[in-house]
Amino acid sequence: QVQLVESGGGLVQAGGSLRLSCAASGRTFSNYVMGWFRQAPGKEREFVARTSRSGGSTFYADSVKGRFTISRDNAKNTVYLQMNTLKPEDTAVYYCAAGSTGSSSQYAYDYWGQGTQVTVSS
Image (cartoon, rainbow, N blue to C red; front, side):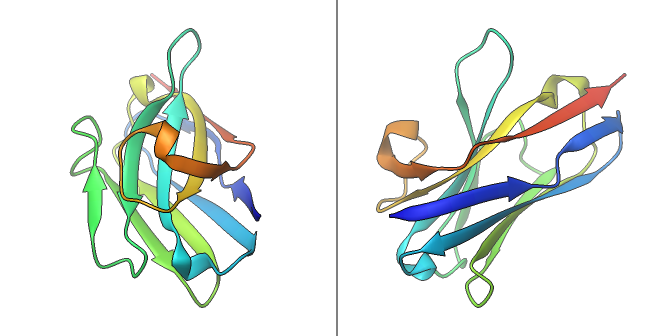
């Protein structure tokens, strides 16, 4: 089992920045691909970004490319999502997830955090 706890969400004005963190415990963190997903009210959960086990490879949804950066610190068992130039359409609950394969599909991830709310005001 892997336990994931997100933090860092909040209310920010459009154009602002937030940094989300996801702390992992349980099994060896570096064994897992880590991803960030988000879900806005009335919408399906969507992929945001993922990073490889070492952090050397990353992949982003087109909607956040150039604005968001995913990174991980395996010594701290933590994955981050730096979000810059935020837009109202980025408003959602953000979830981190751990999986065994690199994928943009939520179904490829085995463990999920409880989510953290990000609200971007216009």
